[in-house]
Image (cartoon, rainbow, N blue to C red):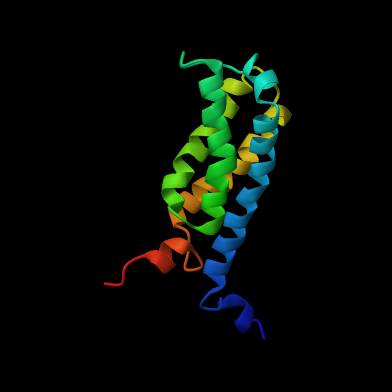
Length: 135
């Protein structure tokens, strides 16, 4: 009776990876908000790398608006995850430094699935697999 529950279906792992990838679309809300209020946010955005706060904010918007869409589609997934992961690390350790954990919770909530997808790969239900040349 428990045997079907203990033996996963052939595509259940890939379906789970798709579900985790689709979770990344929640990040688009934060990127869109930063894009809409770019001028206001650029005035106080942290600039730890001395590139200018507007450049740093533009990189953040790219990591929060473009990269999650690529991740959800499974298109250049691991490549798109690098800026997203770095952005979350930036938010945790630089952007929200000195703040309590609850202020950093969103960044942790996105960082963990991003790292999991990076380690596991996009799964079979992704454009990476569909567009990969057959060998």
